[in-house]
Length: 143
Image 1: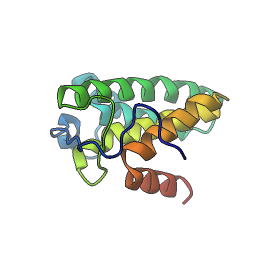
Image 2: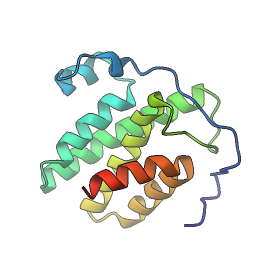
Image 3: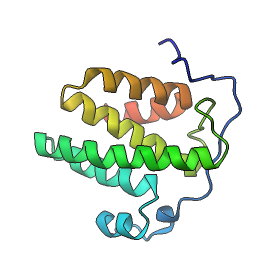
């Protein structure tokens, strides 16, 4: 895949601070976590993944909305931490995973509703941000 014009893989890596939702006890209700931590990409990504797991059109549309929220919350956090639309967002840095999961969920939801151009953009953003993240998430989707 060619890199998007705004994605410079040679730019510096952005490392997000700890996501407050990551410290929430495992098994917590994702709706309550998102309500308590609305700026958390991870919380919205989990909600999107859960909706997409329904495997129906309702889940796809709901997942799309949750994923888009997580994606935008992640962009806000990245920008606050020096990201200017280019550079790595490494999967290896745990706090970055909420954003990367939201991008992947948005791609999956877009594909499910037939928005192929959005799917392609999201996949390219994920690859440009973290090839490892793409491999992990795409591999998990095929398991």
